[in-house]
Structure formats: C-alpha cells, structure tokens
Length: 169
Image (cartoon, rainbow, N blue to C red):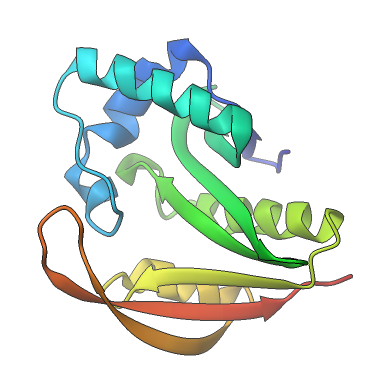
C-alpha cells in the first residue's frame, strides 16, 4: 500500500536500525503509546524479530518514507467485529511528523479496511495527544467517548478518547 510519500510494508530484519534510530529509541514516539523505549541496539534487533513475527499474523506494517527508503514508523488495524475495524497504533518518528505522513497512513488504513468490506472504523488517542486528535478530526472522525485507562508501563491513569468514522462502501 502506498501514497505519494509513504509505503506501508511488512518489516524486514534490516529495518531494525532505522526503526531504532527513528522510533524505538525515541521517548517522543513512545509517550502516547503502550510500549517502552528501546535503549540499545541488541534490544532493537530483538524487537524487530518480534515485530516481523507479529506482522506475519496481523494487519500491521512499517511505514517507509519513499524519498529516503527508511522505515520511519508503524501502523496497524484489527477487526473487532464483523465489518468494524480499529487502529492498533500509528507511530511516526519525530523527525517525520508535520509532513502529512500520519494523514497518509490513516488514509491507507481506511482504504484497506474498506477493501475488506469494512463499514466502520474506530480511532483512539490519549487526550493529551493534540496532534493525533487533530488528525482524527481532519480525516472525518467524530468523537464518540472517553475512557479512563491505566498505563501498563507506569500505572498512571490517562483518558483514552475514541473517535468513529463510517467507511465508504
């Protein structure tokens, strides 16, 4: 799957280094996610092995920037009931934000789910993630509900906002 600037593709082992540099090691990327920062290259290599195994069984991909060919993020979806999908996380490395890549990623995910016969898509973000909320609203999502959650990394409470959009079938 691709747009003018990005490609969603399955991870390859050699992607460990750009993913480590661009995403895995970046506190800014992990801040609103449910994963911990990867602090060394050996851990990044192991994380890439797990990513490859996960992607074989799930609708999940790395985000590649066409211009550089580098892996700069990840994205995925899952079907939560017949024809209803939700994102499983979208992350773009901080050097690559503000370029419209998130919008392109979300657009590809929506197209993919529509091609599978999907009728609804749910997008969630932490209440403090203003860029993610702006992305959802700019892509035609409407606020549905807020849920109190606990961050499994540190036990702190946060608000998860859920947005919904009907898919074009």
